[in-house]
Image 1 (tube, rainbow, N blue to C red):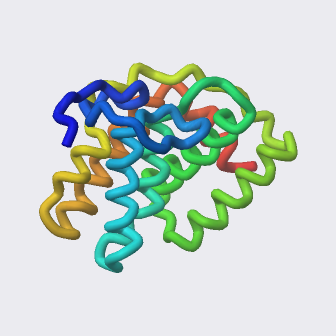
Image 2 (cartoon, rainbow, N blue to C red):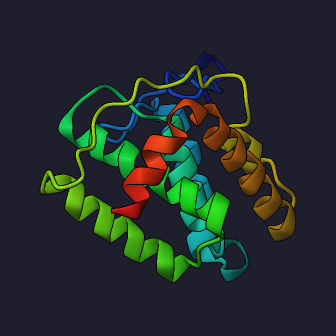
Length: 168
């Protein structure tokens, strides 16, 4: 195994310096993307972890906004709206899915007026590695919530904009 570490360009986590797949517009390194895949696998594979999967996805994507492009702009909008509604209104997974679908569709059609938000300085807070280190489903859920709160707070200069998008 490669023991060399490098900081992820999105979240700053020290992850294995490796080659491998990455998402085409989410700004994550292969090592960080692999860690996200491991957490997602746990959440998909065990119902006790699944209840926070939407929050995991929104936190990860908002923490790895990538570079300005139509897809990245829509992604950041969708996932910040998801974080907003989960942090402030405690949406159920079913409600979150409906919101993601609606916001994604409206943003793609140009009906939301979404635009690139200059990302905050995200490195330094909790990352996917913090979640990966959880011992059991309860601690996993607590860590996901803590991480998501930190990511949402990092985007605080844009909270009013995101709340307006959530109301469309």
